[in-house]
Amino acid sequence: QVGPAGAAMLGSVVLPASGLRKLTLTGNRVMAAGLAALAGGLPRSETISELNLADNSITHSAGALPAVAALCEALRSNASMTFLDLSHNTLGPEATQVCARKSAS
Image (cartoon, rainbow, N blue to C red):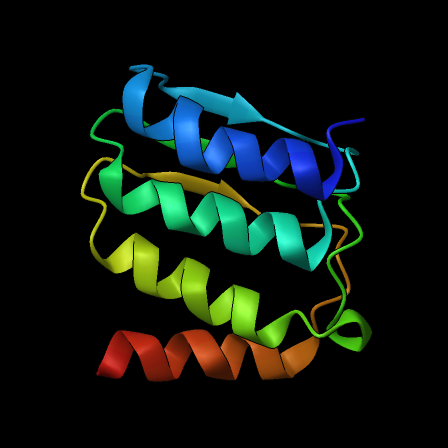
């Protein structure tokens, strides 16, 4: 499993420099900390178009809202991203509201 530490490495080194087009991390327990780290690398990636983060223990009870906000902000500045999967994470309606607010600003 990649976990939050592996996601931090991916966000800081691999996404910005690799030319990676698709990253699938399904079931890797990335959690909120890893989501935030990946979000940090998205604006610097010019090639990533698909990011699958399904079933990664990203939950509203684990304080994921700041990480979701960072992801939504990063997606606004990443023109290549066309697919994002956050299914099977328990984000709740608050996460949708956070993204809606980021999209409107």
